[in-house]
Length: 161
Image 1 (cartoon, helix red, strand yellow):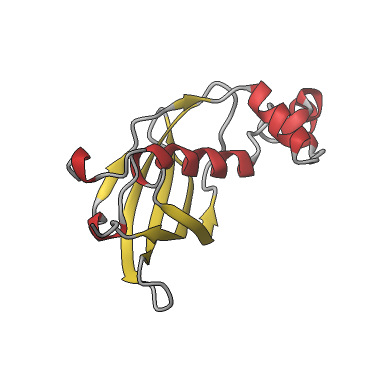
Image 2 (cartoon, rainbow, N blue to C red):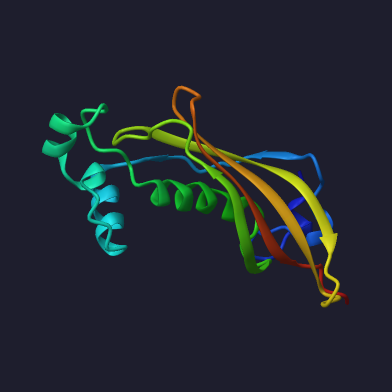
């Protein structure tokens, strides 16, 4: 997408260099584990047995096994994009919309992600920044879409000399 010499020293892309319509396949992948599920659910005080109780899932759900916590999946998907897109160049996340989890994710699935650049505009209040709209998508190893969202981020413009 962009020459590495134009990136932030940490690797992020500046506002000017995002190309609307570009799709970036992220390099990082991750096999998710039940430990991920337990730690995330416990750290966020989520006692939902659908994520943390194997017996409940075996006997009382259609899945027969614990589902990965959807907010973990959302965070993982966005996290996978950081090294390729925003590390060092994000001022702030502005919001997420259209968050969907169209298929389940389970322990042992391997996740990969891609991001499409939907739009960008210069900031009306800050001359050194702009707003970029991303469409993040996460897939498991067989290509099934397991998560997606639109996200707006406040991004730095390239510093002037």
